[in-house]
Image 1 (spheres, rainbow over the protein chains, first blue to last red):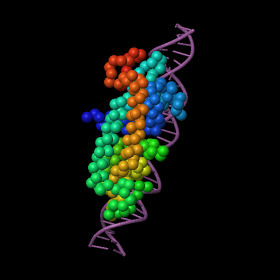
Image 2 (image 1 turned 45 degrees about the horizontal axis):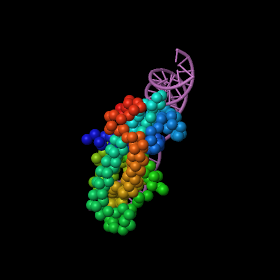
Image 3 (image 1 turned 180 degrees about the vertical axis):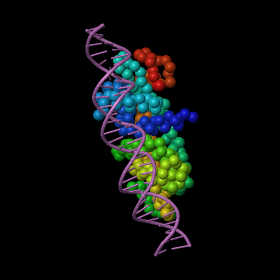
Image 4 (image 1 turned 180 degrees about the horizontal axis):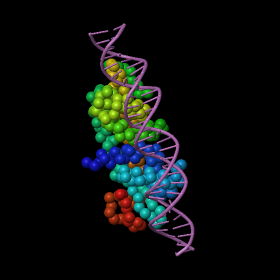
Length: 118
Length: 118
DNA sequence: CCTATCGGTAAGTGGTAACTTACGGATTCG
DNA sequence: CGAATCCGTAAGTTACCACTTACCGATAGG
């Protein structure tokens, strides 16, 4: 129900390159804000702001550790994203079937052979 | 090699809500630009611009059909996205293992029970 | 306590990207 | 060969967002 809403937020959140960078840094385990900022070409407050967005998208969670604050990857957002992508994939597949495929098939189209994938 | 680059573009492209809307409309099969625009609260040129971005991200392809132009979902971008997400997932899993999990576990943390997922 | 470290928030700025209208090229049909 | 339909591009405006610096609260340690 609220799944798609989470996925929407996740897509929005990962729409920014810097935010993806921050997110990937957390894949190795939990890190402090300063630690993350030290590995990025942006200031620490910027990282804080990015982390907030990621947190609202249920992509990360945080816990206090003394004077610091440790962030780590959260399952929820990733799962929502994967589910949404799965749906896209399935729907697209049936569409492909209807359209007699095409993709990676040099020949096959009757009407308009002017493919342009760029 | 260039896979991750495609995924980057795909994430950027799907970072916009309107673009996601356009993309999802194509899941049912190929559609013309005007057809898509008619189902969205934006102008037709706007849709054209969005389609261009999606095309550059290898998420859609197009072919001429008389005076119209039919767009459809393309496999490449979706696959790159799924692969990237899979990697994220795997990396995150091992991180979870190291951190003795947490998520969805009300108890378990010794140091700092002040969880804040929001 | 006083000080230092760490991080979130406020306030302000610049760049950009999402949108609009206007125009022009291409294709189809009478 | 007009006339109509469909679409892409150009040009311009506006809103937003990513980033900065400055400030403040919270925690830990001497």
